[in-house]
Image (cartoon, rainbow, N blue to C red):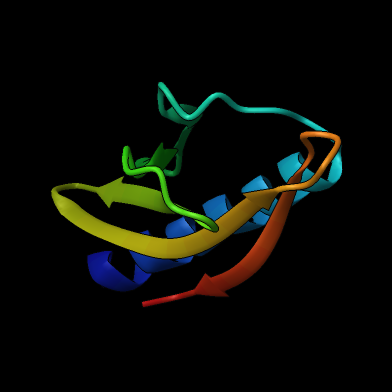
Length: 90
């Protein structure tokens, strides 16, 4: 049950990041974006330190020792806005 709960929380983190990108926010990829703790789930967005295009980030959720993640691929547009290329929930 904790695995299902943490996976659902990681998907919510991916939805939050999608809204973050659509709101014209910028991110320098140096530190994690801490979304917060909801219903005993710590949710955050973590960047891959490698310089790839599109950039690989992950939505993490930790629920009582069980970790789930959702892979998100992001690219920067010409005006430095973040645009999601794809989301893979596994």
